[in-house]
Image (tube, rainbow, N blue to C red):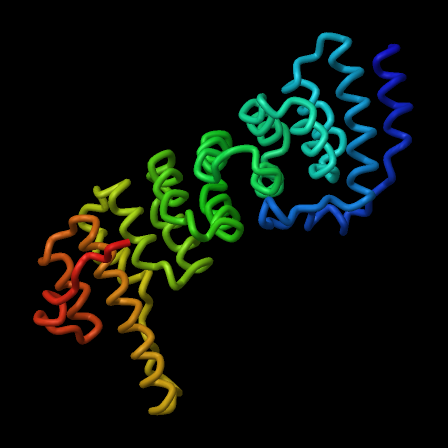
Length: 270
């Protein structure tokens, strides 16, 4: 009863948050630029006191985080800020406990870990995907937004952990960073080469098909050029991953790419 009463008293110090405010909580940013607001700092201090109180009652850090997030899911940012600041060496356990407590907030949980630079982005993605595989594509998209320079490693790690979501991860990452399509395709196919008979179809779906109805000649030409550029990026990425010319040619034929052009597609150096 004392534990419950103390928790209730401390919870009264926490400002109520509307349901609307619960929808968008934490935005990914450069760790060097992350600055929690004064309100987040105030709430984090309250949650730090609660974590300290639970620790005196022999609650593990993971149990304490689960309890707090289960009761105050709208306060992902201050709860995790307090937990990471209090015991940064337990970041793996804290991330897992938080996701298991509130899987619907996986994006916000991992974003806090990224913003606070708790570990390498690929490692944070690994922890998050292992904890909640169904959010793998969203996890990759979020990590890629704040760390675009590491997108290839992020994709590779996520696909290795959850190969059944390889296509979804590849599409999500390419939507986030269309200029890195070649690297995304290469990383995906290197991690999960066994696309089997669906390889060509999957890659053509990723490229997309230009429509022909109700489109002017000018816009059709522009769209076809765009599709062709995407096709060439996909071909380069697939070749880097070791896909054979027979499969590459199936894709090339659908975008008007001649065999001689396909043969000139060389692996990228980076």
